[in-house]
Image 1 (cartoon, rainbow, N blue to C red):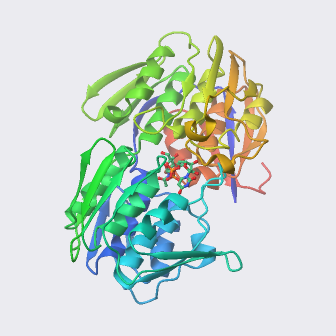
Image 2 (image 1 turned 60 degrees about the horizontal axis):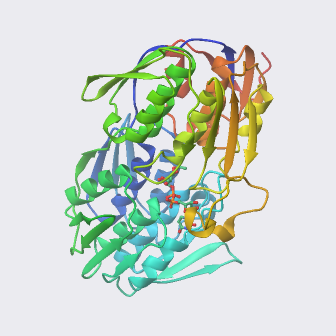
Image 3 (image 1 turned 90 degrees about the vertical axis):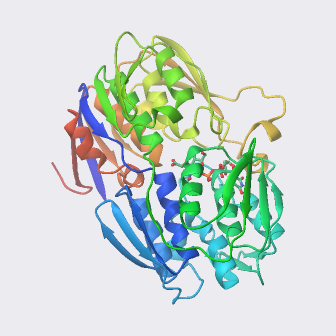
Length: 446
Ligand code: EPZ
């Protein structure tokens, strides 16, 4: 276990290259289970969740070789179809092996998936879809596993009641080798899904976006290996763009996904930030004038992504005025607020009046615990001071790190394995931009 020691305030400026997208990389690894051929994945981020996901496919018999940001995976299908609890329960995406295992071997046993502590995050939408394709899936609360079987998966028309990013992907992964055609309605629109579609089609699948929020998958008998470079990470880019603005600095981002970040760029400019399109894949983000308050309501793509609201909150603590963040995707995504309050932020929780919360919110309303909040009100600007803090989830971790970089004094941040889940060598890259950040053993005394 490690901690960061961060001295602030510092201004960040310089160049950074965005790493491969975590929320593509984890699913790309799952595609290796769909063929006996080797797949070669480039631009894979060196992050903890990738290693955890590789553990999952290795537990099912895959052979893995890592060479920097390139990963070679060849499914050995020699170890059966059970993902051990101690491996699968650490990662939300471990449940995505259900589709490939059912379509190739007719059964799969997976533990209840884990993931960030940002809500219940059930997989009911995934399971309902798989059942429509011919699977039987039972959850055994005694052993904590889902037990799934299917003579063979067949095509189906599946209409999601609510948006689900990995649910859409899980059913795509199940449908590519199924008998017949599957149509996903009210399918998620996140661009990371399009990258997975491109990878699967490069393996011989037949998938296309066939209409508004609709994906059609025509099952094929077999998939083959391929070599594929995944897209870079929008969530990382948003974090660095906010870092430039909140530190009053200037950061040029290479491998930019600007074209898929319209809702963020609009909010960024409204907040007083400036971005310059250097070329198609290079974007410069910089501070130009005092930060203005901007109200945010998160939503599925193409809305303001829920993954962006935590770093956005730290920016709003420095805005001149009052701003709000209304979180509509997850039911417990403000775990960073207490940490920011420790550093002097003025943040109040509130629950906005919503006509029909059951349908308005993306999470299952019955999963909502009474003590969680759906919105915060931030009053700024508030000078932040140092603190001893910790990070509860990946994006909250980025927020606390940015807070420590602009805070006056030396901060200690525990639980950095959380930020390592999704940000590649984040301390080294922030150092290269001028941050005073050091990674040391958690129990080391400085
Ligand atoms: C994916 O999570 C991403 N994770 C999340 O990024 C991202 O925030 C989210 O999509 C929204 O874009 C990965 O891709 C690995 P959902 P996912 O299914 O698929 C509820 C990050 O920081 N729901 O669209 O889990 C669910 O609990 C992570 O990189 C059900 O109730 O999101 C959530 O409240 C965090 N039942 C909401 O719906 C289901 O069967 C949206 O979930 C499925 C989802």
